[in-house]
Image 1: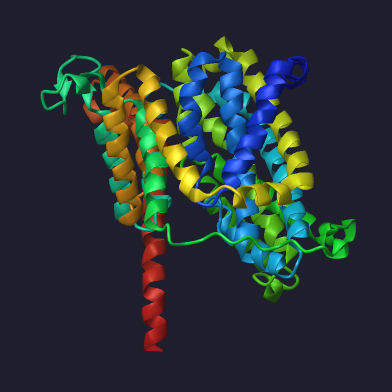
Image 2: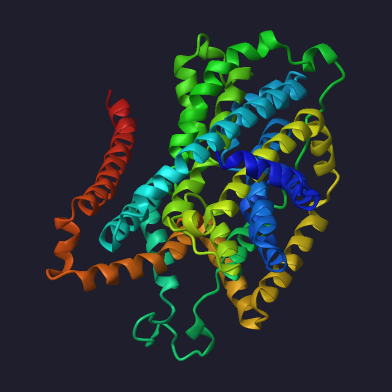
Length: 502
């Protein structure tokens, strides 16, 4: 298999291995800081990769995403504040365990489960991605547009509580992506006479604004809240994890790993949904479901395995179809574009060695954050509490300005970043979805291109999408996902009224 030579090549390169180790540390720390996500860190560090070789740049950000997902569990267990949205499920049992003086035991369970889940997802990606790419090579423009259409519907309708707000977030991302010159006729669109807008909105300043400044503004608004760490305690017996204690967690970890891997392959769903689905399924199958929510080790293991299993498979739609399965995937598209790498099924013909080297870096990164987390998660937690927020957030704020400017050396990008920051903050306040907005922004260019190509191939206009079986299948998948989501929300809204009537 291609992965074994890739592993040897990565391990024999000390500089590349050093970048992977640094990424594991940075991601873990960022994920453990309440209110700061791995996506924000990756967006902020993206300009740094302009000056790096393609593989170290991709590996650095990819592993930050992996370890950042795991790092969120540290904040959830120690601070009762999820470092990431996905770690909110870990918080349900992790914090009660910390209150019982078992914080280290909980973090060790989270670490082992995260590593198993992440390894499972990565192996499934390595085994299956080339096969998916082979199928994707046979898809024409009508089929590819239908895939984009299904992705827009799934992203907009499933990852937000309100279908209307979710779809509106996705539609807004498409509209913003259309600013600039028409790719075929070169006529201006939505530029309002501004020369700066003729080149379109830059991906880097937009993402820094949405994910970094938007989060900083939200944290400033909630600055009266304080972060208090639960002390770990000195009882070694309470914090020593034995095989007998972890063994009951294994069935939950195995099941949750496959749940997370499956959800990861679906564009836009992400690790938060995977973690809560795995938690609910684990509690339903548990021998003592009444113990969940009160400090069950299985309640930490299940969501952590699912959360991290998303990481690898979420790269499958990105690498094979150019469709990011997560916000981190959307940011990685920027790295591919910066280094002139064409993503999609042809990538396995033109850059096969790079792809498998990236997978190898992912596997090594899992080992690094697993070892660091198992032996040093409590130290990371103590380190976080010593960083005053009145220092942290101004530094992030200033770094964002520098990063936005250096992306293209254009002051206009700084204005875009600030506007996007306020937009991201407003989206959070109004329950719109920033992730759906950004992913749709990234997808819009490819969707427009395939749509126009499909129409050029067609003699019957839009009917080409109906007469091509594969294209029709993906259109129906998108419509079915929307209908099922609307019905699900409708049943949830009726349930309280029915209970009140009874």
